[in-house]
Length: 185
Image (cartoon, rainbow, N blue to C red; front, top):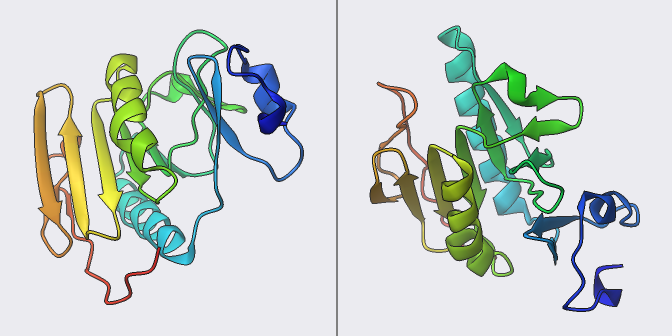
């Protein structure tokens, strides 16, 4: 399906839902971007963040919810932007529907792969910032680095795996990703 679309075609959410079973894509400004299947290291990181953030929220009786991919996020009030962040943390319950999240999550984490590097560092960085995401983490498992963008405070910080990374939307909460000796992509 994605290969048959011409570059000038403008796609909508209907095109996402018309994809064949098993095929996933994201939609940014009317353009479809195919998604490659994640590798094992990627999935371990998604599980780590989902578990740690979820446990923190539960133990502190927080109002936010954490959703790992695949989870639908309709960033804007139009039918031309649809993403599936690796981790979405949503604090406004009114944004959560049976279909996913309508509007920007408070915190988004993307785990970089070879095929998603440009999307995560450039395209999505811009889209998340302009849509109203408060905090955006880009996790690079090959370089053992995490870029932390706190859009409300207009700060950018870089952390290495093994360092405590403070979470901006939760005062007093930090995460530490342990370095892995396996460097597979």
